[in-house]
Length: 283
Image (cartoon, rainbow, N blue to C red; front, top):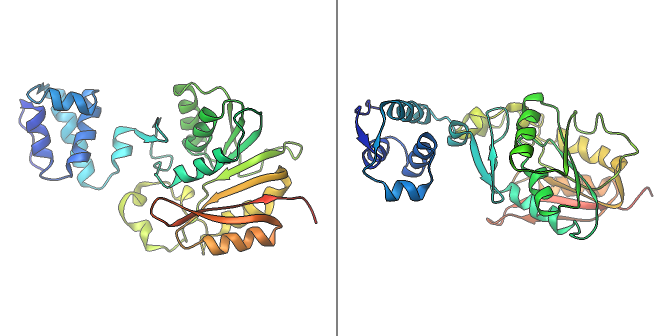
């Protein structure tokens, strides 16, 4: 894009940026630079940017033109009405994952203590959202990435959550078999190794470790389903987010492992995005 002039107003900066990127992206980037909200931009259209602000805005616009996700450029993303800090070490929170949180909350009592496990927590969005809405729940958040876990811990502190414990581990490794959970929620890697979507959009910039689930996309899902029964109380729930075309296979894997009441649940677009079932004990 052409260089922005040294003296430029909020309106002029947005209009210039919109020649190259969509207005929503430009607005979010400018809000980040100025440290203001959307309402401020609307009510202060003639405010002049400093030279430093102009240069920083130009740099972010250039990065966005190259395709870098807005969430990584701003370092934050809203999820379940909470503002999470993120970096390229974690997945960008997506609206579809709010279904996983909603289904978990429906199964957790407001008035009784219970134990919840969030596998592959990333930035901590699922664990923290559950903990915020169910303060009596004791939530354990696990991730194999030290970088991701650092971000999760930052969000736990930033959002003032005191009922989440974040630990490093590869799925269930590091958890004691005596530690049984009432509910396990997970948004595992479920994209196949050679899926062409990995080469487009935001996925190009996100950590492959958190995206790719083996040759058919089911490596992590199979492993979690096969092991989860050892860490669930009888009557406990396992909920898994998955790809748009993976519901039937997920349900079959759950049934084969002895889960009951196995169902898949649609997101707001009507796409089956989460499958789960109840562990009823060995049979």
